[in-house]
Length: 363
Image 1 (cartoon, rainbow, N blue to C red):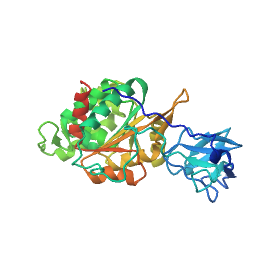
Image 2 (cartoon, rainbow, N blue to C red; image 1 turned 90 degrees about the vertical axis):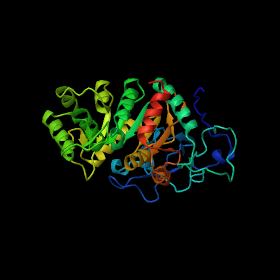
Image 3 (cartoon, rainbow, N blue to C red; image 1 turned 45 degrees about the vertical axis):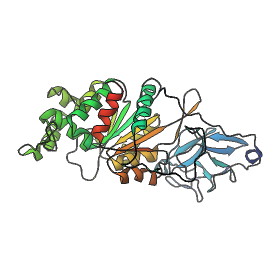
């Protein structure tokens, strides 16, 4: 099969409903970090705002932010980044009544038809057959390696199995990873595996616990801190395999965000939540495909920053593809419950998933 991007359906602004719609109302932010009453909150979909008789698309968006008119264009800004005097769009309707149009049905459906009102097995569950998803994903990744920016969001389980670590390292080495987002634990356990052969004290090949293995991850963090950075630790200790080894070797950008329960943490981990969020968004602003594996909170956080579309450098608009991989149906469905309605779930363990994708790509 050959991959083809879904076609974007441009709104017909010649229709009377667009022409007769009023301009969007703009009101200055009363103070820093504060929007005016009645502000419009953005979504994951393309949104157009009528300003001085012209419909303007917000070229970058994310959920639950504020649309600001600035320098002749619409920018989408987090509340914490609002400045007093920013011209914020007001309005709580989304179908042109207040000069705001949220374009939800904006990409051609794969089958070209309309959704049916009832059919069996529409949820993503352990009963779903995912073979077609794998075929699509493999072709998508081949396309994205040449034309896109693929952001992977990894949980610590991605480092618990040696074959999975090697398979993901092959994805990195062969250009299928543009950026990686994770927490302290993923990097720690992957480095622990390269350093001591364990993840949380359990052998990554045999899954047998090592004596005093519960020390291994904190010994690893301690040694990395002694070197001062992950790259220096990898070099100094002669680490030859794993996810962080390939990330470092190929100069792939990564973002590690801390949590309240972190041990250590590693030197590169962001301790400040919003600094880490800004670092994530830097990559999401470029992302054309996002794949979250075995991490509910990090994937939801990333999903809330990810719109359904990307305006490319040549002005064309394309779909952003979003996958979540987890053993739990609850985790897969929770992402949709948190607003990431375009996310596609695959219910399986991450070890099988990564190995299947690598195999499908011929790695």
